[in-house]
Length: 148
Image (cartoon, rainbow, N blue to C red; front, side, top):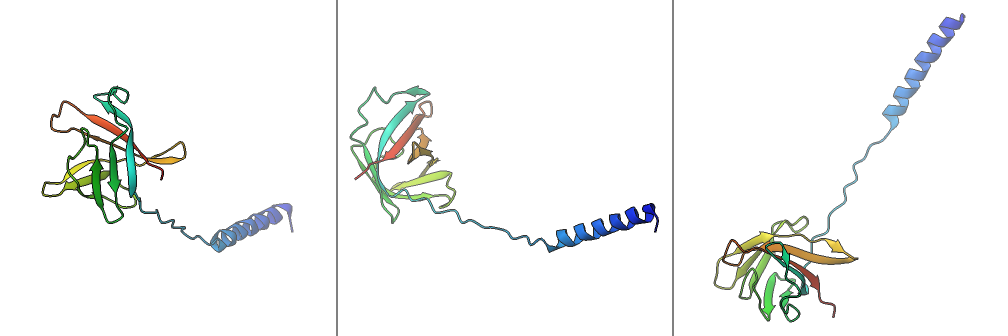
């Protein structure tokens, strides 16, 4: 057997081994289910921005609370300029990957707002924007969960 034939056969053997190795790899898709977002609990405003200007220190936001329940109800305590002014129900557009939060005050029409649920300093926050009546005023509220 010549050296050329030996390299030729070795090349074929390598190709066959590679094909066998590639065919023997088992591919499996790993599906990780995203947990539904749970916003139930009491929340307070930690930051308020109006028209791009931080107004957190210009008004007393400390007494405002919004209570979200597990059965999709909400109630307001010490209301301020907010998305809604009455208690009612709420819903997320997608329980696992929400981008919109919809408030439906009792007896009124639904009001929808953008929704973000980031982790900041190890704790979940809620961030949303809205215009309460006058479209030239846009508020951006960041809410933190009130610890019991």
